[in-house]
Length: 104
Length: 136
Length: 126
Figure 1 (tube, rainbow over the protein chains, first blue to last red):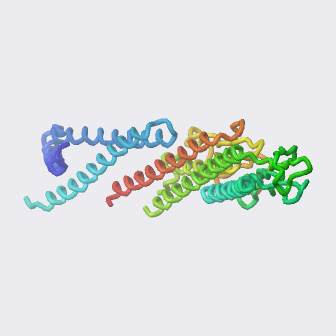
Figure 2: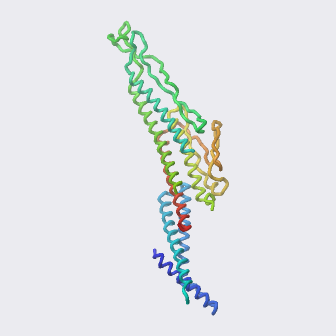
């Protein structure tokens, strides 16, 4: 699992890239999302999957259809993923604010 | 609360088993208690009966023990002319208590007692988990 | 935010109430181990499908399934606590196993409950 701060920096760069390219696109009609942005989007989607699996496993466990060990593993996974997402979210917001404050 | 009810039911069960054990102990102590005078009645085995009781305050079926009942029936006679209770032929009526039967009954009562104790333990553990949840 | 509307939490709350009720029924069985003619009972398993569809609301309410049941305490909700006779004389080993199983499931569900709440708190930023 990559360092969340590195990911956050990548995301902030991507956002900055998007803003810049959006500005450029407005000028010359081209659209480009940026490679780092895509990377982060995919990571976010798989994270959401992990969270959903955690909730599903919990429900199955409560209904008595899943093994306790399976539920424990799925929930631990979801917990770790959630902590990562929250850390990234917080850093991205912080990084974005830093960038905004930069004077050009 | 359900868990509290469970504990009270188990407590009633334990009380019943204790009373049963008391009667068993009495029987065992009097295995050889003959009468004091010739032709008199020796000790007779006692048993208790269990019956289920609807406890309205709990809203559940509890258990209660009836008063000890003497077991009727023919008594064995032993030849013991020296005994104060010996009749003209030298026979003495013996109590209808069999130590083996009493010991088996005692084992059963202990097992039931332990089972009720287990129920109390389980309910206690569940209450403790609920409190943890409350603690957050 | 009403936690009781989230399916998972609804299910967990229903399960906990069911397990508490089951322990009472099992305690009845064990207390009457030596009562002649007594037949043990158990609770019908929770119908999660109905619960999650919203056809029944939780938490639960005792249902008088026998005429002898009087004054069942109301705790809102529906009939998830239905006693069914399991027939035959009381067998102590079977009852002990059920008691232990109930306690284990209770521990599991409360721990899961705590964990899910902790996850929500994390997402909120605590």
